[in-house]
Length: 65
Image (tube, helix red, strand yellow):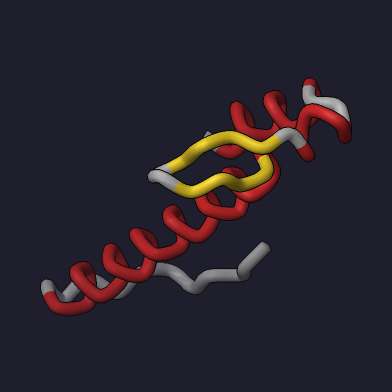
């Protein structure tokens, strides 16, 4: 997923990233969607780690980004 997003980001000009779109009934610049996607994936990673620990699975350490 991150490879795909990186490819999309590299293909966009600064002007395209500043264009506004309607997302969920809110006007926002295109670049903000990439922040939303990253935040959403971090959110689900957290849930996955908790679920694993609740089931006795010790996840490997996380180094961050």
